[in-house]
Image (cartoon, rainbow, N blue to C red; front, top):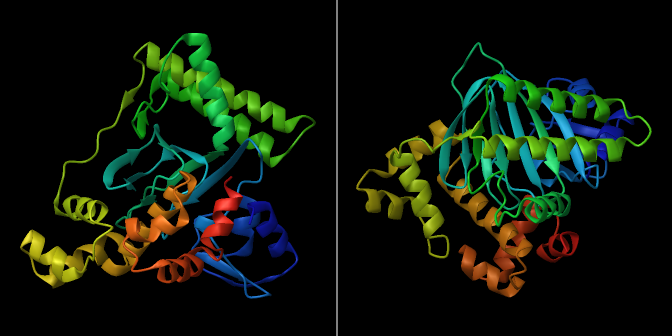
Length: 326
């Protein structure tokens, strides 16, 4: 369901329950999407991970959060760019952790699992602009740049997830993003085309910064036990993974494993493993892997178990998700 459709349901009072949102106006006026989910009158569940893009090209949302993030591990079928205006948090992308501060830009490609990690109480507000880019549109921009500049690979992300900006580059990026937000909030004639051109400018700006070495790429945080466990889970998804097998592998107690996940994710080990299996299954579907091969690759005992878990999490079947992303 598109965010605009959710807003319409809210305006028509078609919402029964809202989780982790203080007021309805926070969604309508601020376009916040950092919520677990809502229930509509017909009992349909809409979660953050299920939201579709409004535009065929680009969406932009301004988000302010001074409390703990509650977004679970998820992925999208589109590119997501997060421009951090203030805050000091950690972000998990696949099985790597990154420190995120003002001026950082997170580039998340389609299919990559990600989520903010729990943050300790802080007086500093986490303020960011989130941009969603249709993957076909992004690939068109990348292809055009490769043709005109004679480059072989996407020079923007270049295999990295987090870019660091400062000085003039930060101000230029901020200016373009503010224009995007303004246009999305108060559309004018040819808004879609105008936003299209703004992103092309942003894309070119990143490329020039890359060419002039005016941008640097953040490295993942130094590996700790949590990272090793996440890597172990990612590397063994097709196998049976239990708290005991994790504890035995790392020579720690089962209670230590539970406490580690509760502290960092506020969820159980098994829940996070299931989320990782499901986000991986979505990525495989987007890569056109046959549906019948996915349960085994992701660690589900059979297709029916995979089907039920997918339906429970995303409220659509794997086949419906596949057809949507064709």
